[in-house]
Every structure is written in structure tokens, then in C-alpha cells.
Length: 270
Image 1 (cartoon, rainbow, N blue to C red):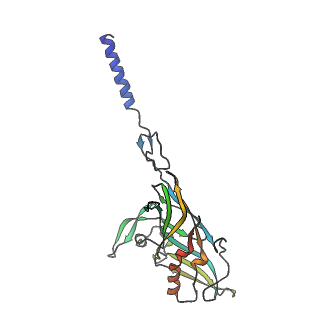
Image 2: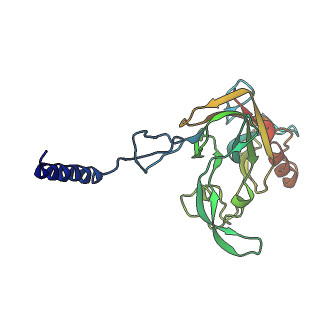
Image 3: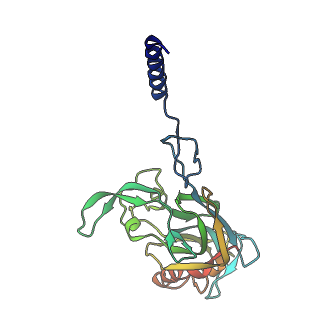
């Protein structure tokens, strides 16, 4: 090869390398935990992660679906009807078979009231299950985890940081559980008493105190594949929630029992 030809070959190689270096890198999600993981991607972007899916069954007992507008008898022997309800569950997490807990992530900045009485902006989890007669499916936050789980955890009511939210903006999940006074309710029951008369009395009961954390166990571990949406199927048995309630009793007693009865009313559909 002549000196002139060697020079031309060298320039050609340089040109090819320059053109190759200008090729745009292929964009895509490079995180294997994401639902849209792209093995061929060279530049990370646009990752979407699995989200926890919840399905709810409302029941009269272990096998029968809920009949809402029926006459029932309370613990004091008084007839009543449940006209509507709103029930709040929070803090849902999955415990893997190694004993580690995994929680969905879905935080939004809200105004909260701190321990000194001052307001401040703070990220707050919006992972709430707000049960109403027509709400039966929920999508919670991102779950960057896969594997086997055998327990779930729930809280009756709100987590402390959620309970501190004030001035919730319209459209947020906290606005849906706020009274006109701004207080966030954990339960709302609309109860019709004196069912034998033409115009029965209707009372509304608001629970604004939080209940307890409780756990539910699976009969056998359940596996979540990488990039898969974890799914849970829960049953809420309304008569168990209303067990031992006398709607003619002192309101403090009623609200205390409503908060305490949550764990016995919620179960896993295996």
C-alpha cells in the first residue's frame, strides 16, 4: 500500500468512527424492576413501575355478598338500615418470606400541621383505601420489589403523617375524606333508625380517631414476578364491622367500637 493510500485509509477509519459516535443512544428504561424494562436501551428514561392493585368484596358473611339497604337489628335490639358508609384503611404493606416489609410509594406534597401548631409543606403518602359502597378496586403506589410474600399489614384509619394534613386541595384523596370543618374522617356511617315509620330518622356518625395496625396471613406464600403488579383480594364483612354496636347508645361508645372492630371485619380472599 502506497503512502497516499495509507493516508486515505486512515481518514476513512476516522470518518467511520466519527459517524458512529454521532449516532444517538437508544433511549428506554434500563431498570429491570420496571414494567417497561428495555434490554436494548442505552440511555435510561421513562421507567414505569408495578403498582399495588386491590380488589374488595363487601359481604354479609363469609360467603354472601352485601345487601346494603336491608333492615338489621343492632346489639340493643333496635332495627336499622345502613344507607351508606365511608371507611379508610392505610399503611398497606407486604411482608416477604425473609420478614422484610415492602410498602407502595406514592407521595405528594401537602400542607401539614406540625407538633408546634405551625403549618409546613411536606411529602405525604397518598396510599389510602377509601371504601364506599361503590368503590371496589384500587391502585396504590409503586412497588419496586418482587419475590414471595406471606403477610400483609393494614391500619384502621390514617398514618400519623396523613392525619396531620390540613387544607387538602380539591381533587386530592384527602379532600374526599374531609368534613366541612377540615377534619379528616376515618369512618362515616349513615344509619336509618325507626325503620317502621314513614319518615325514619337518619343519623350520621363520623369516626375521627385512628384504630390499630393489624396483619393478615396468607395460607401459603404468594409470588410476585419481576415487573408484575402485585394484586390483593380483600373481603370486608359489614356485620362484623358493626358487631356489638347499639345505635341508640352513647355516641362515644359507638365511635370507639366502630374503630375497634376493623380488624375482625377485614380478611384476605385466599
